[in-house]
Length: 170
Image (cartoon, rainbow, N blue to C red; front, side, top):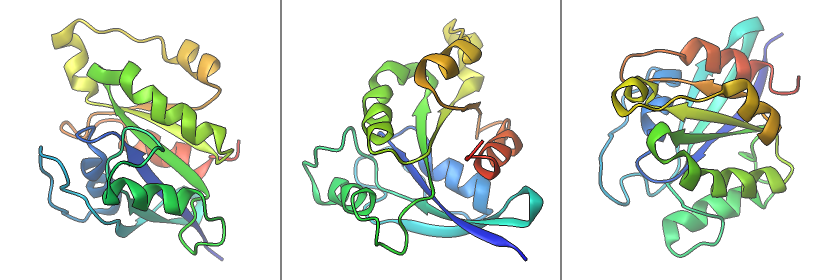
């Protein structure tokens, strides 16, 4: 018997949420580098290890849980309504390696809601070019979460992310 879990992709605008969505679901949603490209949630299915199916929800970009626009309100309404059929079993916060500090505000707000949360650090292929190094073990310990370091552009780390989603309760 296969189990289905709800997975919400959440993050600041332009962190690569839709690219992560496409990598997980095999769909080809429109990706753009301008405000409001994802103004409603997009949904797809991802097959995970151990026969688990994930219902993936790509939410509009938001900087925090203090809504200042309609698309940001979509995120807040879902995360605050445990009775919503799409309420996430696990929140996957997508951040980009070049703006990690800014992206962590939203991550901490979601963690405070006590929803199981994973952190994805996208654009890992830019680290060498930008002279960035990260101690993932240290970050996982400090943030009390599992972290997937990925590059959707180079299709690296997606299988690791699928494994983390599958084992989100561990």
